[in-house]
Image (cartoon, rainbow, N blue to C red; front, top):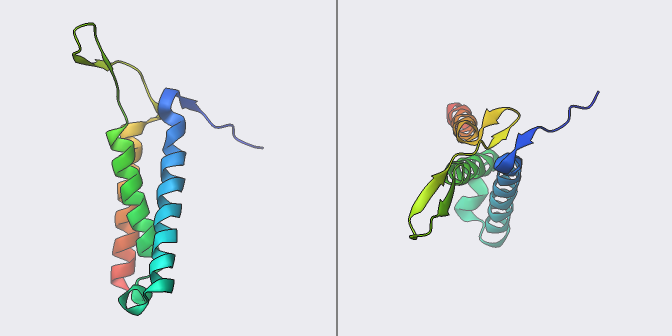
Amino acid sequence: MLVPYQWKNKGILVPVYAVTSVFGTAMLLGILQRNFGGSFNKVPMAYGIAFGLLVAGIWTYLTCESYYKDNEGNKKKLEVEHQFYWIKMKYWAYIYWGIAALIIIDKLSD
């Protein structure tokens, strides 16, 4: 049985941020390894994925709230829930950072 994706408002951006960041850093690491070699060849791809998750966490955390400008031009916070699978966007940032930390710890212990 397929589970439908559940999101509210900007929550759909949670997997988009993760896929974009991890894919982008993996491609960047691959390009650096292919074109420059040297010390880049010694970097495991897991570090690229962990760095991508760190970037995704930062990106998610910085965009987890919505703002608008009132008539006077003052920035005001908009009270809207942004969730993916019933988890707030801010908590997804912490999840990404935790997974990245686990990957780094695992690779450092090898």
